[in-house]
Image 1 (cartoon, rainbow, N blue to C red):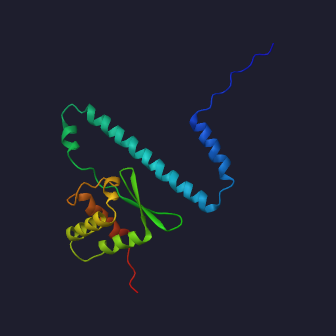
Image 2 (cartoon, rainbow, N blue to C red):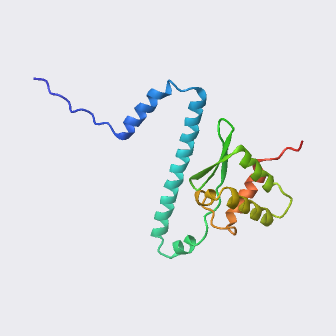
Image 3 (tube, helix red, strand yellow):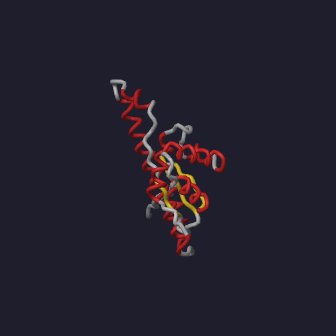
Length: 167
């Protein structure tokens, strides 16, 4: 008598991966590019979470109390800006979180950032615009208040990455 092997139990990941593979043959290039971009963002977020967990574990094991001192400091800005494959939107990514902005919103922020005024003045102007137009961005990008030094880092990145063409 032949022995039957127990059926292989599929994990939720296996089921999802199989479903994605079956859909891929029906997607066009734009759809595949979108999925790749989303996968990159998700992988980045997973990496940030892993690093944050490692940092938290290291902080807990610090016996000299240094963890308590560093917990009161704001995390360093790690902003990144990615353009969607269609070019219609931009994603500002920070601390494993991201916020989507339209092309028009990004142009407005770049114009604010490109002002010749001081970094402090421009940072306040960008903060005011976000408060008026996109208050949802504060929580998603972990911006505390208009004194948060990370808003200055965002202005610097906008200045560095973009230039407004003059017609």
